[in-house]
Image (cartoon, rainbow, N blue to C red):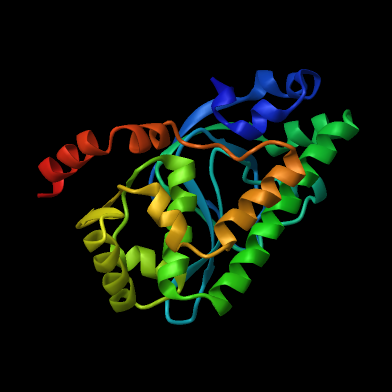
Length: 256
């Protein structure tokens, strides 16, 4: 059950055994706040599905995403290593399930295993690399390229069905809703996505990759170099490649 999270599956059996008996699975509803700024984190979350976002609040009330964690990682690794508080709000962006363990249990496990400490440190190395890449991407690439990269990242973590409004997407990317609407319309017209209010379906992954900036592949490369394995891919990707006509019929029946 817990192996649905790839980060857990990459751990050695000996390291996993140090805290496996304390893991339990919980639901993560949309909007759930897992940590507030400058507050202690009490639990580590290893998502099986869904997406956890690290967001920065602005004075106008908007929130901008600075990083995301899904079934490829863990929320709370840094705090387990150094006992520091969370600098940002951490919330559930896409609902799902996760394996959860108390942070004190993890700290005891870390104390008993240098290799477990190294594994969590590797995760934070990847997470920082992801944030740095996003900062460069936001400064240097078009809204269209950034949106394609963002959708691909979410697709890899959750699959083709994304419960997203254009307003929320704009907030997370730090761009105006009108810009999101224009780009989403263009992507839908080109057959890359299908959109209806509050819901996006990824239709053509390969075309999205062609339109995304290099940051999507760069982040994947970081994961491969740090963990010596490819990031998780969703099982729907093979279906999207192998049966486009079937998918087109399904999409038309839902979206018109």
